[in-house]
Figure 1 (cartoon, helix red, strand yellow):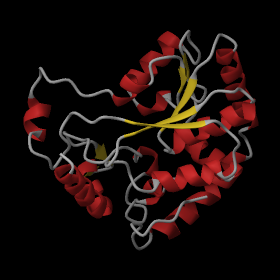
Figure 2 (cartoon, helix red, strand yellow):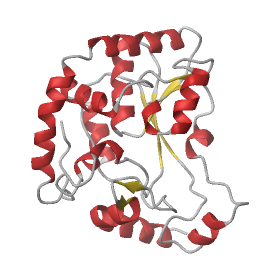
Figure 3 (tube, one colour):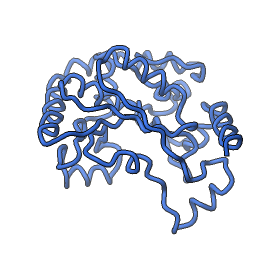
Amino acid sequence: MLIDSPRLKHGDREHWSRLERYDQAIGTRLDRKEEQAITRITQWAAAGDGVCSVSWGKDSTVVAHLLALSGVRAPIVWVRSDPFEMPECDDVKDAFLATHTVEYVEKRAILRNPKRGEEGYETHHTNPNKKHQDVLKENIRGRYISGVRAQESRMRQRSARWHGTVSKNTCRPILDWTAEEVFAYMYRENLPVHPAYAMTYAGKLDRRWLRVHPLCSYHEESSVHGRDMVSWEDDYYADAIHAAIQHRLINR
């Protein structure tokens, strides 16, 4: 269920509808993947309490759904980076909570580092002695479930080999899922999908590599089939970026 957004451009919805034909076909073959993921969650929960971290992107939404199916009682926690969260994250959250009975908690991060467009951003990110703020690590200190997938980076692939899907403190139930399987599972289960994944310039970008993330967090270009994430953000989220920066200026 693609959440609607006025930011979608001409042709975005039509291209998304074409992709859903593939999602429908792949979704029929995911019973075993679902069963394995639920087993991983219950195995992790047997060792103690913890939480499920979400961003309301595709992966964490699927994991929150799998948690609900598992019957494990673990709070779903969203650490918000306001005012830079993509506005539609709240729409995804509301749609999910309307159909799932879960314990839900929100935490608001205190953002210390400047964002793109703010004074000091370039100086901060080009200084090797300045560390990137790890908002999740600061706010989720105990055991947790996440939507991390090995396909997304070489570092995660190495981590998957070292730590597997379940460790003492972490559970990554969809670690071995592909992005195609995630989208297909969302279609099969009628889960709310953030519209950022349909913001592809009518198919010119690959939805698999688009991200739901706090805006203005990129320093270097992160190529998505020839287009950097900075220009993508500016094209689709210029109004939200302007509002976020103005909000920070007024409230300092």
